[in-house]
Image (tube, rainbow, N blue to C red; front, side):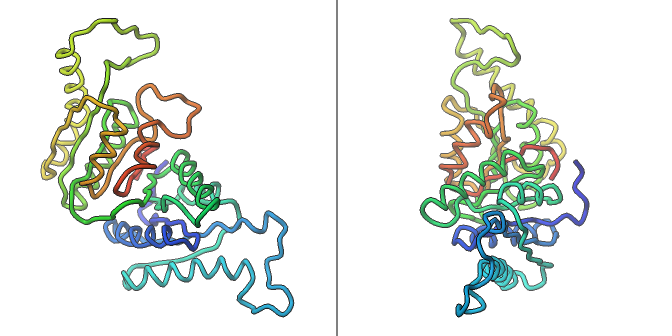
Length: 294
């Protein structure tokens, strides 16, 4: 998939406070990229057969369609207050949130979502939408949670997989765009099979294993460090759970970048365990990369 030069930053809204946080971050991302911002609300009620217009005697603004349009209007107004010169459009699209946002992501340079939506059960539902969109979108997905800070490094999780390489490429570009340093983190617990059918020894040299993990990190970022010599890079090879290590690193980061799946991921899972852990427990905005374009 090739993203065209005029592709927007897309942000999904649902009237929640988390969605408005996502709008504020999406404005900044659109400005960074010099791209337009497209505000989208997925309007599922037509699929339920419920009446879309106000009941007799109710205010004309009481209908579900009017409420959906108000969500978009409020989000667009919020965005224009932050960036009056940015090209901003808003749209209500009929359909369930996941397919609507996945389709919107096809033509987006970045898709921005809040980490949860309206309270209670709706919040759980919209949280699952975020997971599904992040796992299926054909552009990088940014999930806004924690503190959206302008300082701190860009942190990228590295494990030597194909998607990890794409995440590294995205992270270097982001660090360059933000004039930030980059921290490349490779966390490991035990030697990891690199191919199907690999058999690992029951006893292994810990120092040698750690040296191999350090080589994995160095080789994963070498070409990108040459391409972006102006980006300060720090390597971190840590023995520990990758998800926990990245969650801890997110406390000091302005952005964390991971691939949707890493080495050894089960194909049936929507997201890998590492991306899932940072999505639910991280302290900064997270970008999940599934494809290489962005």
